[in-house]
Image 1 (spheres, rainbow over the protein chains, first blue to last red):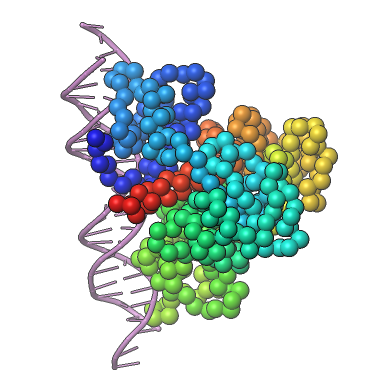
Image 2 (cartoon, rainbow over the protein chains, first blue to last red):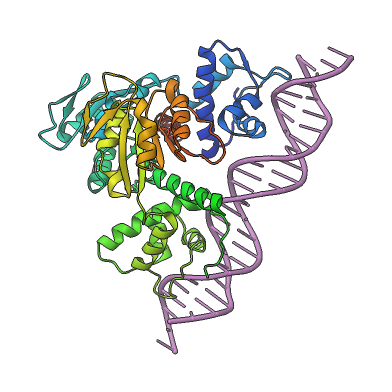
Length: 216
Length: 216
DNA sequence: TAGATTGTTAATCGATTAACAATC
DNA sequence: TAGATTGTTAATCGATTAACAATC
């Protein structure tokens, strides 16, 4: 009987995903044990934070030795759902959309790309790797037939909301939004916003601040 | 004499960048005033948070009317450095790197792309929009000659650390890292990590949790 | 004027860090 | 055994929200 744990804070979830990626690398290296301190060092955290985070899991380490990498990896994969594959479609076959479709990272980390769509008739029919760009009118059928879970939005800001509604109407439950606009969605739909330009602006601020400090 | 404000927490900085993007759109629409409540609604925050954030700026709103969009935009642009352009290079001319180079978002939001580099000789010389892919041996010269501020890393995880060191040695002060590995850098160098696959994994967790809750 | 909205203080909430007994 | 590392509680720190007097 698994103990009922409270809902995971998103700060903890974000780190669990990181630990999991790290554990996979460590496993590949053939390592067997890892300590909270080693995990913390690798990600720029404190060992206290790591141990607090692992409290959210049904897994215990071993005093003096740390955590058995293989076991912890399995527990995390199960909690994160990394042991079942997610199905996604990409909407927007511009540069970003096509590069994500061609990028191997999604596939190797558990996601299947079930289609790429664009409303531009000139794009439709073009090949992107093994996929052929489809028109928006096919979206709902593909989502239903292939039981697609997630939509990745890589269209311009002006079309993003319409695309989101289209995907939600088709039955999708989660959106990764790369369009530079904040999406408002109904309850029950999850959204993760990816903000490349904004990240760059934060970086730009930090650099300028550093330069000022250095002069002072 | 501008009052010396304390260092800005990164949570506040992240939102200031968002406000600024929003203010730009509002300006384009020809709007003149905006309230803390309207800003909050647009980004899913509370008006309290917005007003607290604006306390970090040398700018005051007007009781009963809100904030004058044009003035607030200017103050923010100045604080964020959005009134001076940042220069960047992209290292890694794979799908992601090329799509970022071709993407207009960086240029329209204040960043100039000064070069794209790859260590693969077969890539070197190929055109990516107006840019030609250069070999790694040219990197240091370009960074120095064009006074490049930022590096965007879009190489595989295995090469990311070497590329980061190369960029830092060339004199760059900030890195946007899209490689799926956590970068360790010396003091004084800023890093922003972009984690597409990890974002997708967080989304996947949220969806599965939602599905469980719906069943319960 | 009356009412809406700011600026700011205080209260709450949540996340991180410190500390240390338990333990293998 | 002795020492390293866990699990967990308590302390600290920081961020968000609530509340409301000031005000145009």
